[in-house]
Image 1 (tube, helix red, strand yellow):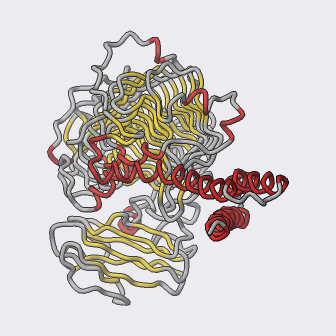
Image 2: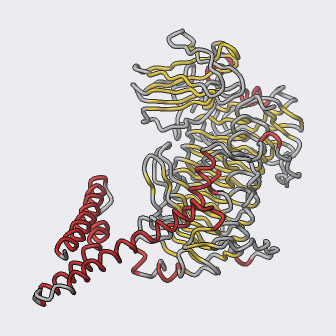
Image 3: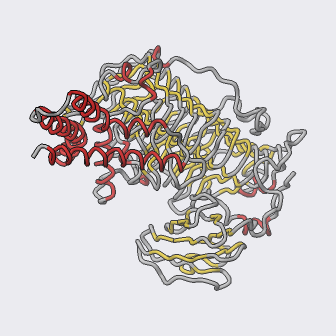
Length: 638
């Protein structure tokens, strides 16, 4: 079992506060330079990889290796510096304007299998053994003046019990199986003062539970766990932090419950890069965030259930990205949720989140997810939408089931499926009024043989695409996470002072058993209907002239080509009286069948990279034959 880290080595461990933003196998990684922290502070890359630092703050910053091996000039806001790492090892660095080696604005690049400087060797998920007996209680400020001092003094299985007060510190947890608990959820406040990076960071320490307290005003995250087995956040409030509220990355066996998040430019609650995750998000409330819940490349025994998601830009968004491992996202159950009024254009947001505005539940490039028994209402664009995720790869939705939901009051459509898809997405038993494409439960019903074919509506993707282009142009007028209103007091944890330590022992204490409610039967006031958007072939008029033209082009071009092809061929056939009937029949069959060869061949092959390449070649070949025969028809007819 890994024991507590002594103060002499803790300064080095402070370098390792945040999650890796890129997979360990990536050959290019990025680090933000904020005022005045590096985010993330620790990043692991393979030998030979390059790291690029970008100044996203408002002050001058630089990157200087502690041993002088590399250094940048002072970088203006927007400036970048790139360095390649050719040998395994740990490379600590700092900004000379706002720190010094090991102090202030510092970070570390871990190359290959290098360990964190000064850290214990037995760090990593699943390496710590649960304690046989609960440890003692360390009280703040009675036994230790600060939360960090109490965490350092606590033994595995122990309890850190925090009295009411505002604690202006960033807490790093490297001791496993701790329970960190406030005596009053609303009065025990960890405050970053818009200067510190994370409220509570649990670094590769299994089984840590955080309970009954508030985190606010941190440059990055309120509470986060990185690379652990066993985590829990209960009765936690996180608001107005610069990235996420409550966050678990590269971790398994966890639970978020009875918690609240608001005012985050990414998501209020996040679970990412895990498969299987063995995790539950239940009985939480998220509002005034860019996304209520985000789950990048996360799934497998992951349940987002029995919660309320309101007044965000969008509600629940499992998604696939190439910037993290384990793509594509697959296997989340989204059930029993009340998702309503997620149309907050003035919520804090980043460019990547803005396109999801006005959508309740989005499956973004994910596969094999189940969305069921949710009440989804009052969204400007779509209630539930399946959308592709364009990144370095184009990730299509595939095999998702949307069944038995009540969806109402949506501006464009209650149910939507964007083209292209990978096939196998289906809809059944939903109570809804409108869909894109029309008759979605007939064309893509869960019992229909047609659902195996790719489908969807090209117009569904136009709105998010235009919002993405708007965001990339820098024209966003979104809210500032630093100035969002504070939430009202939240319900506290019962018996916080008397309850014994309750560490998040994986597979035993977390995740806890649950029952999914049927949110369709909730006795709640109906969200007001939003105005129905007028559409042209699935493209909303609000998309503007350019968007309508794109939508018309995407819909009309295949029909125009097919009609022209048949018209030319048949016209040529009619005017040649000497052509024998058997030739006429063969020519007619060719005219009608050749345009279908590409799509048929596409679905006849599997999904490995080689097979995908064969698909593309066959589609291209079919279209090429299509074009040659059309030309031949014109030539023969002259």
